[in-house]
Amino acid sequence: MDKAKQKTVIVVVGMPGAGKSLASSVAAKRGVPVFVSGDIIRAEAKRKKLSASRENLGRLMLKIREEEGMGAVAKRLAPLIDKIDKTQFVYEGARSVEEIEELNKKYHVFTIAIHASPKSRFRRLQKRRRSDRPRNCKDFLERDDRELKVGVGKLIAIADRVIENEDTKNDLKRRTRRLLRTLPN
Image (cartoon, rainbow, N blue to C red; front, top):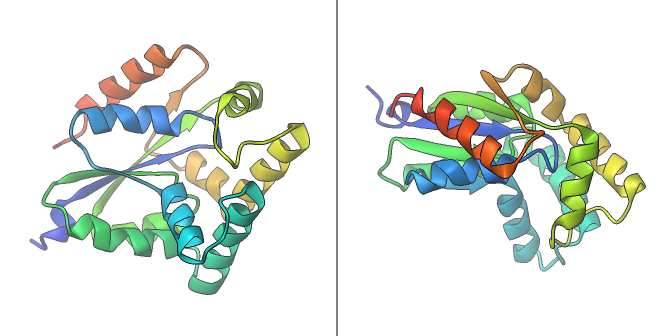
């Protein structure tokens, strides 16, 4: 069997502020390497000497996908996965079905959607200390619109499993741990 195909990529998807990072941290505590799509975009911004502003990162995300295809970020992820001698990985923040298709060429893929209401997501995003957090409701809605345009809604709809995140952080962690225990190592 192809060595790469023996690896499983657990793709964690969701709208901004849904709880993807918290869910991914549960896997990280189990020793599973976690790769974040936003980090890949931020690294590209740094390489191009762009500030990591909300506007720059949003434009860069769209530009990379426009120039290299909707699976571009997943293509950049594959060499990172191939360097590590593990069987399970988390890719947090995929945005399109094409990214899943790209990963499926080399790996087993299992998608988990984290779902939270817009009200909960906006409140969480406001608490973040990141440069790309929305300043107001208009920013929040624009970001949601941009994310939906690249296909994240479809990914959420076709996820293998969905975890609701309307309660406490510990509730999300518990639900994520429970789901991860059901996956083969």
